[in-house]
Image 1 (cartoon, rainbow, N blue to C red):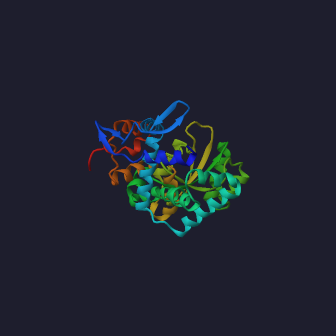
Image 2 (image 1 turned 30 degrees about the vertical axis):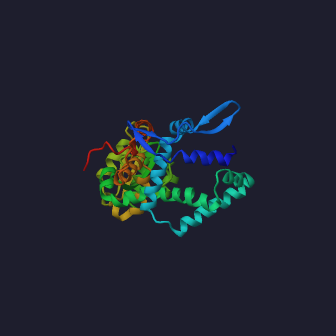
Image 3 (image 1 turned 90 degrees about the horizontal axis):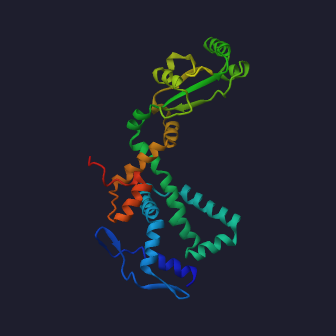
Length: 291
């Protein structure tokens, strides 16, 4: 049996014919599909291997792609990105990529439409989740745009603060003149920002743009900072906030749960349920309380 036949036989096993005692059953499980020497492999044996190895990931990824297809419109930009990826693969891998498609029984168009474009659609789901739940997520993570200037000595920090308050120097200039440790960039800070000192976060979340520059020693006393809140209204910096929130792992998990719950994702097979529960807990929504 060649590779293409094996792929076709494997795909056949995904056509489920029934359910008994909360376990998926397939038709003709004892039917042989390949023989090697004196060893015969049946449909049931291959199915069990596939279920154990790929069942959870396939169930989740296939469902996610279905959800993305329903939620996210395919754009010309996505089509171009997918085609660019195909062209890159062909340039980098040449015949190897062509042989891979042939062995999988796919054309370039199949690969684009069944894999690349669905992946691009899936990437947009978290942004849609955030747009639909923007106020509540912002309330949870309190995004603020701030500038944090860090110095190694109290003297340098105080000199920088004085120059900034009287307007004689810019943030970039005080970083240069007073041995600043980081660049003078504005950035979005949330209560999930682990790279920002807790004392600085406390000051930032209680300040407003009208407060101007403030001196803040770090909680461990190793650095001395001058900080300023640039913007604290999420609606005035939505694009930046969306990008920042989308990078938070808990937000990504909440997005997954949101869409899988919206579409009623439900697993009936006990083996598959246990596997998804262990490896993809945020996708397993059927036991969540009803709203």
